[in-house]
Image (cartoon, rainbow, N blue to C red):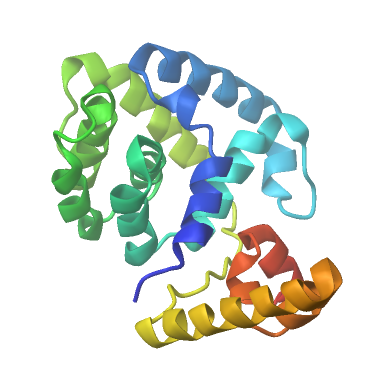
Length: 214
């Protein structure tokens, strides 16, 4: 099973991948986030009933952890450029699994500027000591893991990638929607979009999840 690429993209896009992309920047970023979290532990423990703006990095991590399974991880690592690799490697540091190892190994060499983070994730998954230059970062990631260890992961639902049959159906639906627009403009096109697969997949993840909570 593959998760819908647009849903995986939503979580990658919401992540602070730029702050984690380079080693020195990531060490400074995590240091600041840990300092805030350790000052706001009661607020973090009350998540999701209580939200404290300075803890958004940890909330963002928790939301992705709520979606994290092998298909989600492989989608990030294969379909979302270096941004997905950065965020996927970060999640593997927080919730390491041997199942993630093939995908991590598979991206080595593709994104040289971010390979240090992949190597940190691999070392953590394999329970190997990190390279000397990565020790400070891995230690900070371990502190983040400890901070989040008792915080419940929110349940996150994802849509499935459309099948070949569904893609064919969507092409037919698009033709109907285009014809409706030609006849009656935007209002007619919106009416034709209702209850279609095109409309189902056109929603971003947050909109879909809000409209379909169960």
